[in-house]
Length: 419
Image (tube, rainbow, N blue to C red; front, side):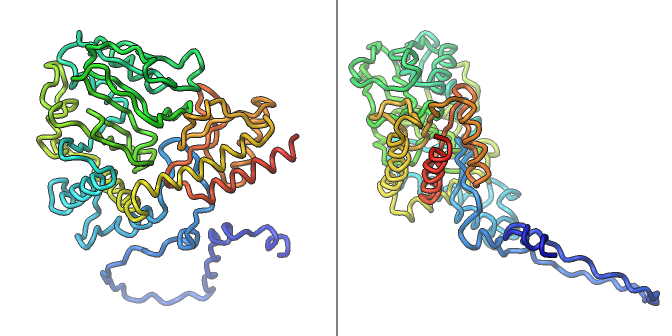
């Protein structure tokens, strides 16, 4: 008994099930069966950990990524019976009044967060940001011979460029490949733009390599537009949407679960897609149908709406950015103060506030030990992307300050134990 008590933990006690009572030895006389129908309410109480505002682990995954606990708890409470409708939002018609209200509020709250002007459409799409690699040139270029410029600052902008070559005369106006994608153009004048390019494409934050634009270049072509894949820093800070012809972002990093992609596109750019454009990649299809041309990812959009409410409740994106700067500052300061034990290869002026890649000077074996020991301490998904290795801490909006504080304390302890 003593050994069993010593091995018990708060979490293991939560899983403990009392033993069933022993069946009586005497035979109980049979009684006439009576059938009663009774509605059983679904359990609504959150787990003890959730009730305490904790989940026991910190999820540093790059995406799908951590979501605000309050959002998950609200979704849990509404899952079976959405606001008195008697249905889950996952099973109700996307053309019913309940979901219509949900998607309209999600759009209105996103417009409020980013101060999206009336000149731009907000679209809830499917297919991930990767589908937008094709949709952008198909909608913004009149033909496959129209030029388009790309700043290739990492894996995702490189993929976008390669896909766009199928539907436009895409070219690389600047590349960070020679520096292993650890920098961005210090002078936007160094971007060798085609003066006839229909658009200039950037990835505002490279999830894998951890470089982030702090400002944005302007297209050299005065009638061209700026296009940005903002998947991994979407809604992490204020953005002047009016500077962009198109912003697109997969939701699964900062604003929701996987399954929905958000596009913010200037209205005058909608309606001129190339003839070969599939109906589901034509922005006009979705703009004309309020993102309801076909069945949308209803639950994912609903969760995005809850996240937008949460961001507004925090005071908006200016306040959110301050929190993100503070979290990232703590982590980068720890790396820089380690005497070279931990190394972040990214140029300091363009270090990402969202994705922090680093290596250990002593090599891959110690990195594996670091990741394994961190996981045992409840810090998960710290392994770097398979293409680059190392360690990566993704500290999106929903990563609490306590998660970063625990990580840096572990880093210092690990260094002391493994000099």
